Length: 295
Image 1 (cartoon, rainbow, N blue to C red):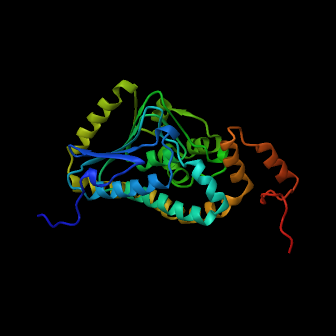
Image 2: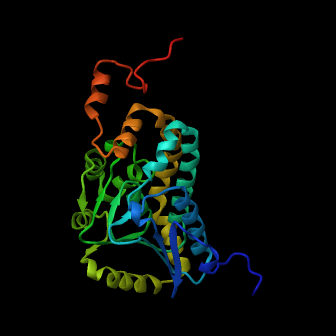
Image 3: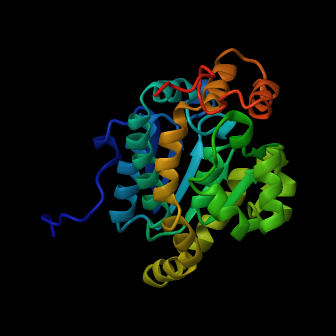
């Protein structure tokens, strides 16, 4: 039938720039393609991911989707803080950006086909939320995973705060989110944050083995199994994400967020001591200039 509407398109019809997209032998591979900035996420990445995930979902020849990063330094390191700086000045625009971030994760988790994160490099912040939105994960054993929200002036509420307690347990989730320490891939596998940590030279062989196993399953039964497995994630996500989107937008002008972004740009540690001193001295810590507007 040549007039079907709900089908995939040839990969060369998309002209992606911030991601790579290929479909070979029933496997769709989506690659974060900003290696010069450690594959961090800007709005172009989100827009292109949304299109690619929809195409892979609709393409009946695709049995499995693999998500990975360009190069060998990073899988994905979360939001592009250069872009995020603009949202400090216009938090209403951050609310819009966050809407697209949410949509991309909805498409990935509800793809209807098994998804595998191929963790070829470090996984930081929102990059780990992409890892967790995939069904399974394989990592090179020389990489690490890290959440950074409380260190960098944000809250990891686009998946991490909801899903980490389900994946690794409450105590470990608190350790990850409150301490922001690096989790080496072998420890991540031990905790259940990923499925396998293998020597880098064996990463693609392990991936090929897993993909072959996933392809040898019934597609409808796999799709509905995913739907059932998503119950607790969907429940936690949909009861928190809308509130989180608004909270992050409103608090994007806070001194903590400003200091997090500025310290990153200036390549220095955030000045936690000054922020805490302003709290202790009641020096209007919620206001950027330290002065509450007069009535």
